[in-house]
Length: 190
Image 1 (cartoon, rainbow, N blue to C red):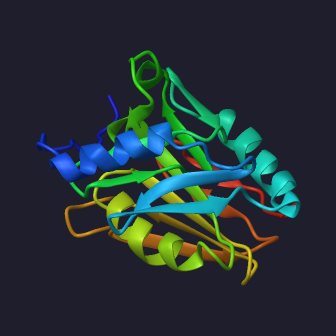
Image 2: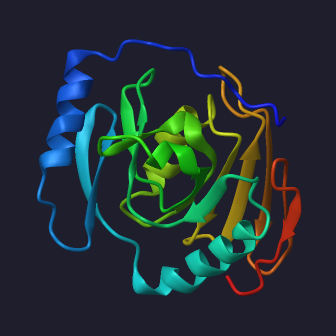
């Protein structure tokens, strides 16, 4: 069995639950997604067209190495982080299939084994700061694909104080993705 961070059951505040309901009921414009960032509903555009190939290359490589019962996808789903009162819709994720058998509109963040965020000028700060802090206490592997600096950073070994390890490479160099994936990511197509 793979060792994973275990979430602590917490009762989310009524305000957080209300914001999640509001996000679920929103009719966001085509091509936009809504997330709960810093306690606010943030609506941002889906990734630019030029990101598509990189997202597909990453998803295809990951899918070949996902743990049994999990899958890699880019579908826009909101994952709940009740302890942090956040709800994120990652650009790419690997999650336990069982999390999508539940009723409701928001998946449990404890189902995530990897998250990938592709930075843009509008999301870069949240991807490098806010999300790094929240993912760093629960998600085993976090990839920041920095489209502005042409680099990819892998964070792993989450703890209550954030990730304990990280590696950064420029696009075109191989990047080792740690357990539970344990493979070398080819970034030449990035």
